[in-house]
Amino acid sequence: MFKTDDATKEWKNHLSTLMLMCRHLLGKTRRLGRARQLVDQQLLLEAEHHLSAASVLLDPGDEETTLPKRPASPAGVLELTQLMLRTDRSALSDPSKRPAESAPSNNHRLVLHAEGGLVPTPDFVAFLCSTQQSGILQVFTPQEIFSIEIDDGDIVHAHSDGAPKGQRLGDILVEQGVLTQIELLEMLDTTKNVRLGTNALAQRVVTRDELTRALETQIRRLFHRLFSATAREILFWAGPCVMAEQSVRLNANMLLLDSARAADEAMRHKDS
Image (tube, rainbow, N blue to C red; front, side, top):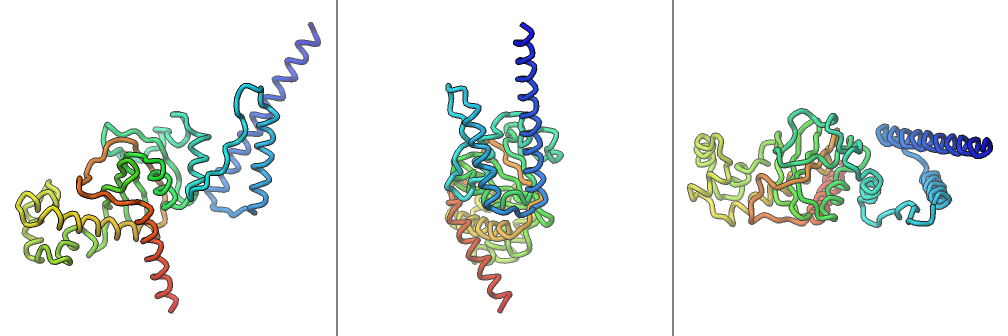
């Protein structure tokens, strides 16, 4: 009996040590991500190999315990994170970490919360859209707060609280010849608590097609800014879309590719 108790005590000690080591490893990887510290890729692959081997060694034989394979999509890190932190009590959905009053509505639930820099913002967008999520992605940057509405993986609306002059919806309608500058100013005076696009449609000063074209242009330009912006914090709220127009539905991959080309062109012009 003494031997059995002694063996149980030793078994529990080993489990406790293993748990502490796993917590230490998790803390170290989080610190590396937050510090944006580059680590030799071979070392990371070796660490993954040892973790996978340890998982096999601890397999009781009744379930698959090897680590999930690295996904092929550009958002592989996020998919792996979701597999490993999918519980409601994970750090990604901790209500205490929410920025004050940032929930779009009472019908939205925070399911992803990350500090900027751990994964590039375009990868977050690609991940959410490739898995056909629906909700609102908020990206907090020093210049703007971006809000992107996603419906079954498609981009259906996007706006920010600090769009530069020339990139707001009214400016684009003037640029495209739908409104004159005077008409825009008159519309803004009468808009008040009503959205400009909704008011313009109601007054029949724009057609649905004209509004759709302007909104799509606005979204593309917003993605260009988002692609190059430095994110401080990223949140995704699962739930219904709030401001989406039925006629607007854009492919996220096409928007990201277009933004990447625009960023490359801007860099070439800067260097020349």
